Amino acid sequence: MEDKRSLTPDYFERMYAETSDPWGFETSAYEAAKYDRTIAALGSRRYLRALEVGCANGVLTRRLAAHARELFAIDASATALDRARERCADLKNVRVQRMTFPLDAPVDCRFDLVVLSEVAYYWGSDDLALAAAWLLSHLAIDGELLMVHWTGETDYPQTADEAVEGLSAGFEGGPEVLRAERAAQYRLDLWRRR
Image (cartoon, rainbow, N blue to C red; front, top):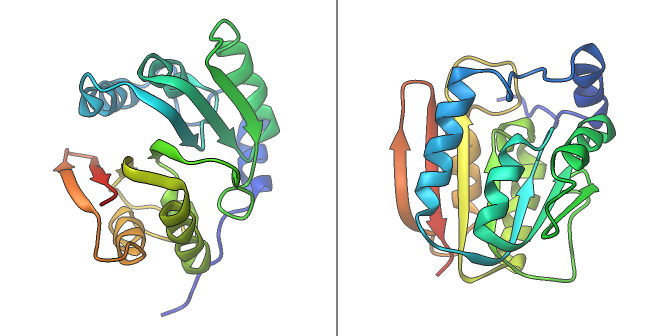
């Protein structure tokens, strides 16, 4: 099987150059329902330090902020981050920064929540393994990893299932699965690091 490379930051910059909301995060009924389910999966838990990888224009970021004392939101697209900064400007617990995860990732702290919402299938196999290794060293013991991915046809390097399976393979002894749900168009996985 051919190993496809991760999508580059240029791909996302081109998407945001064409429209301010290329995936309809602000307007799509699918996105709204998915975000409702994503937030519901967190329950009433409040996290000390959370990381959102691929925050895009900050629609989900704004909702996640209510669940974390500190939320670090990263994305590879400078254009998307400008929109996320605007959207979250009044939220003092949110910090937004440009990073191309997993090649460029926070190194000096641990997180008790990491959110990968429609992002892991953009990575090739090498980057998927690198992301899993980073999670092992930066997700706190009993920290949670929340993933949500579209299950329809794409031309991305991974399918939703391949991305989740690839990350699972990188966890020593496997993660503790708290939720593994499938909706009509996406899957939601919530894991805890043992």
